[in-house]
Length: 374
Image (cartoon, rainbow, N blue to C red):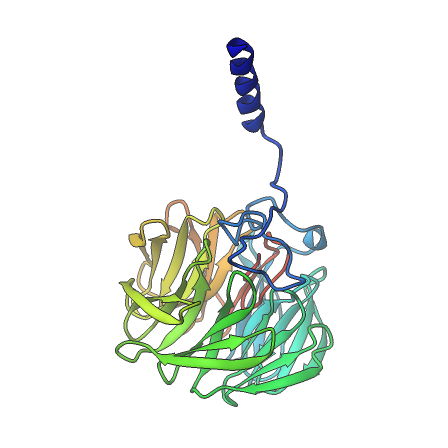
């Protein structure tokens, strides 16, 4: 009887170790209590588990492989072929295009021109713009994880405008009591967002289900908060701070800062690797990228741009092997080899490159910015 039991155990273990393809969605963590309509998380220990190399949605498999660069001084979108590192197209948009954002359903890319008060829709199958909508002050654009709302971040108007995600019809305007609201990310359960207020050194918390402002805190030593990114385990948010040259660690549920990690001068953009092990941090004022180990919460290495540069916003290639960043004040775009940290290319573009979007990317839906996919 004991012999048979041992064989059974060996059979079960060998079966568990077989390669069986992508994991099926599992039950959500009860503590997360995800908002109804949010796609189930594949791995409750990693909200980015649907973004592994090779996990492209069927919706994007016919999309052109391109890097879309909004240049907010010249009001032009440069389109780069990531295979040749060449600009293959350029087209005009309205004044001060800031970010190129994938729609929640991955069908379109949106260009937000805040001074031009427009959102321009790009068809990623052709790489061409197809429509322009009049929208007040779209500095940035996000989508709630359930796909119910688009959130236009109206920075100069101090508002978050909840809109219908396809037509962009206005549903509700939420005034926020801070200056320079610009970047955000969502809790693992999709029930609230944490947003940065660049010009007042504050963070705000917003109820995304009931569409209302909840509260705000002031960062230690003031600061100039920029990008914000939820950790893979959903436990904390990392807040890039250009003034204090590092990242604040914020407990979103308690809404309090619990730590600070230096990264480099002008800490600005945050990007999770495809395996969720590290986060790439652009340090705009010193021309470097810090590689931050998410398990140890330490910077393990730093990449320097030869001759200097101004790395800002961007994203990862679908395979995770290239990190693309705009050179905000350098009229160039950088392509880093994520295995070695070396520059694969630096490409001259029009003046004022900002929130570039690498497309397509793996994942099932977008929560906005330059491509935060889950």
